[in-house]
Image (tube, rainbow, N blue to C red):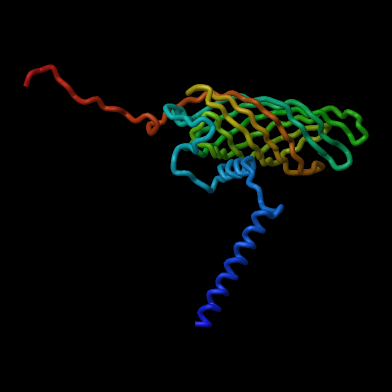
Length: 249
């Protein structure tokens, strides 16, 4: 009997200690606070994960398209333009400032989340030496191809990530450099109609160093418009109407 009473009193003491510690934790000034803004930001970042493949055509964000699709006309061609900013071009000698950027784009949407785009672009950027004296401009012409990932899928507002590879020619002063580039960027497209889309993007064209130049980036801010064309049989399957006849049997 005495052992049973001791066991019960021990259990009560443990329960009181647990309740006391729980109360202390609840009233602690260091108790974590939930942030709706932080939770929303984290959930949006998870949507950008290309390895988190969804099963549907969209993720219920960005105004999902129901009766229209980016795949109705999977091919597109367009123009873009904007401003571009450079950096050091030749160590302790030349640096790029700012200039204009523009070109043509041609691409295809392979499915709701992935696409491919080719660009032909040119830019001109003011040059200065490290004493601040103008040295004319550098001129670039390039061709590149990039993979596009669209995390929202079939949405009117369609953010994208891009990564690609290309070749270019850059001329400045008496130099003519031919080398490779790696375009990396983010942007968003807007489904204006089933034929037209507009877009804005930020692209860092990483240029591999060659000769006197060092590896450098040219960051461009672009706006563009594209025309969509082509057909997709899977998007609009053929409909066969039931056979009827006016002849009596």
